[in-house]
Image 1: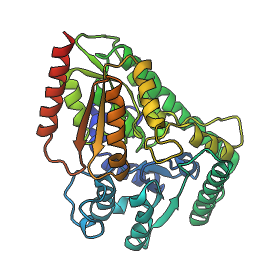
Image 2: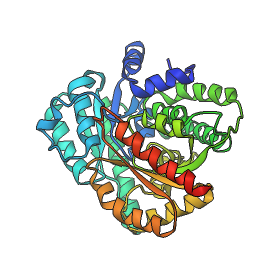
Image 3: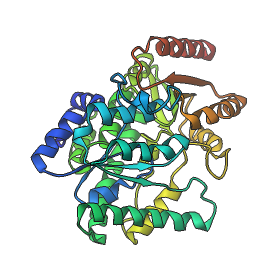
Image 4: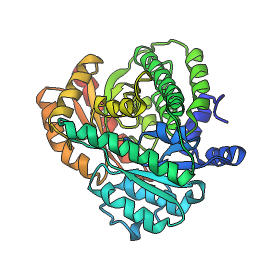
Amino acid sequence: MWENLSLDKVVEYARDPYASIRDWKKATGKKVIGSTLADVPEEVIYAFDTLPVTLLGTHKPLKKASSLLPDNACSLARSNLELAMSYEGDLFDGYVLPQVCDTTQHMCDIWRINFPDKYVESILLPRQINRESARYWTREEIGRLIESLSGWLKKQIKDDDLEASFKIHNENKKLLKEIYDIKREYPAAISNKQFFSLMKVSLQVDKKEMNETLKKVKAGLKLEKGSGYIPIILTGITCDPIEIFDLFDEIKLNIVGDTLVTGSRYLQGMVDENTNPVEAMTARHFSRGFYSPIHDDVFKNVEQLKALYKEKGAEAIVYVHIEFCESEEYDVPDLKGAIKKEGIPFHTLVTEYQTVSLSHVRTRLQAFFEAFRGGAK
């Protein structure tokens, strides 16, 4: 199904993977579990021989979610709810919903009420990590999720099942990292849109099959540097719609590093295959960078971003701001001020999940980098 995709097909699936997931479900007879961002241990879901699918919203019109969430609620949260209520609800057998902000903490009850015939489970992993109780809590939550899925699916999993899942997921991240490394050095080898489509599709389809596509894509890349590219860092939570990457490609911006949950933060999720599985997943949670200042050190994300900018030899930072995302609204002013204080060019790109036109985004992005190029001469 997904083991021999061309880059054009990957981009097509990045826009809408659900028809292919529906075909996969029909062919295999397996269950599909949707989860919202971030930090759901998808290896657990996969170990139960079900398909974990990261929900990344819809750009189709809102018809029902607006009656359950106000207009100033996070557009990703509203869009995910709309996706399940109006467009793809029949595809999913259940959902695992992480609680990462005020909006998502209240979402689980909304989903339970509106999907009474589905499996709906929440998971709450700590943001403040500088205390031993955080590790205890994380272990207990992962164990609770395993027990919950076991009760619903009426089956048990063993450490061997988890370890097999780890190998598949780790290979997926390793292959994506290797392609990303090629992209950094050879920006003409693969476009931003193509690479982040590979990333997005990997979050939504069977990784064992997708790994075969990644191997073939990597082997087929032509190592071309091109000319006139500006290396940039992309920061935020996620970058949608996928057509935003077209704008970066048009201006010849090469994303050499990022802090996206749907980017490098996913790639930081390698799990130690040689230790107790629950302990390994617990340790993984604490080894990842955090995409929001809502944790133990509100300046940590600033320092991490500055270090990434220097490490990757970038020349500018672009922040993708999801409209009405409360953690980003909290984050942007201090982050923008701190980065500009360092003399680093910083551009904020505002988008939302029901965007119908990117003309305003294109105009501001072009103007910023035309001024940047002019100043660099």
